[in-house]
Length: 352
Image (cartoon, rainbow, N blue to C red; front, top):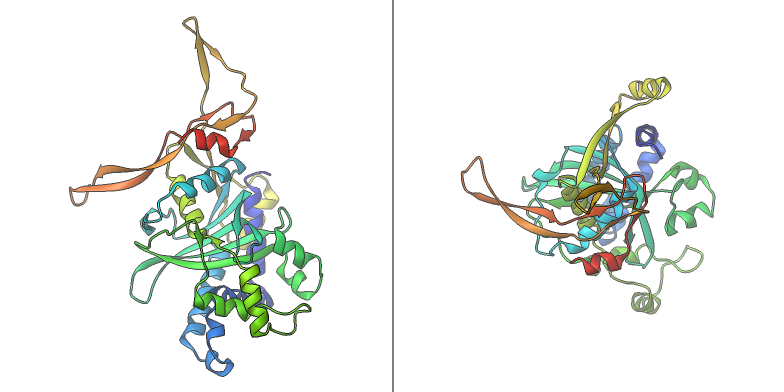
């Protein structure tokens, strides 16, 4: 996959954002993800503040989808992001100031793995974000996660694609995973999270008997909770690890412009960015010294032999005091750039 393909993907997504039926579907998905709807009676929901807030959230997604900085994350980076997220402390705090742009459209060549509360495997190919302000004026980030059903369909996408109908055609390439808001100084939390009572109320409102028409009875629901529900992956950690990794010295961010005239004209017509920011490992020349002479090493692959987070103190140029930043230590990526990256868990474990 070429990095500039992300520009075509962004143009495709923008086209979906202009479809009124797709906008209505997006509103429904945001309502499901937030889960507040099932805490109200139907007549109360229509005039609730929560529904109004969800409408604003959906508009934020449409705004990002119709014009944001475009990022293409090389497949080699996804394993590092996933591993680095597991090494963060649950007490780490969000610092929105580290997010590189106000709005972002990031496509992952290799998807990030996420498990939902029903134990289903979700694959994140696309992350959209926008900087926002909460009701209390606190700086935050609204985030939505998507699967690319054309390239790497996950369990949910495969189930939907197996029953073609109007909704499937309307969804198109990108299938909804979830959305969330995170705010300044919010704690990252544990790698896995349990559903709270409000979450369970929402999940029950979306859990039907076989055939999909009737909700479960109280007895059936209790059995479903005990046998089907499981801790879910904390997606905040994955997203935050991505933002942190982008600023590390082992990462190279380069710009690629639209390659051909047809692509440039389409992007110009859609009023989208004409270049994509590519996130990949910084290129390094690896050599070995034998007998006092340097020689090139013909490695068969690349691999990571270490990596952990550390708080690094820096002098604050504004206050003159000391501030601390998260930095990634000893991520030795060995091997030539044209060889595959092997990322076995045992390599990471041995290199703590």
